[in-house]
Length: 306
Ligand SMILES: [Mg+2]
Image (cartoon, rainbow, N blue to C red; front, side, top):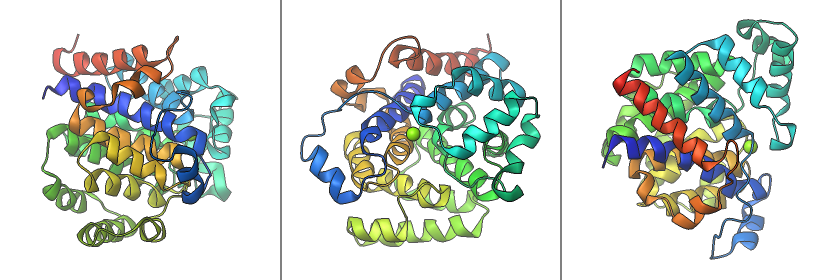
């Protein structure tokens, strides 16, 4: 499968997971299953803050041929629409930057000076995962820096780096069996190391959804959602099954859907994404065609440097 198809799959997959999960954000596992039932037709196709910010990350990487923190923050601010459902920490960080604070300093002032460990940096990281898929050190550096614009807590940054590296391994076509090993080698924080061990144990026994939610989580903290997305990807053999499963866990469904969609799209390529979902994904100025174009641009900048 072509690398370009994987690049497109990662970004479109992320947006589709977001849009599929969006109507269900904050619902319990039981409620989700009563809305979607067996069918899983996409309800609205509208994406949320996850995708709006992912678009900003991609735009900035393309325009700057790499990372530029001030510009990435500016892109987030330009693209911002409150109705997309931003979290309070991100809103506050972007407000501070808009009012003149530097992108290096704004996010560190949140949550009593500890910074956010929410999943808001991991949810938008797909462009970093594909653009730096062949360089783990650079990927980690840029994942941390791009997180820092809004999420400066170590756990928020590490979650973004882990999600980005999962996407990178998926682009490389790493065998699923080898992936957990590579992720364990990559991750530095002990909380994530423990989660990866749990993923391995849970995969070995085909655990039920309640166990996944209690062991891996379905919440807004990066460490309670990134591992859940990785698990959802590893457990199933198709884009559709992985994303449906991730969202069916409820909780922060749009973000866990987006992260699972990004890894799965990068692994299986655009062709594996159900057409009816892609067609239902919103169009317009920064809709599905634009997202696809961003993936093609990232590919072009990376490999042709023009
Ligand atoms: Mg969202």
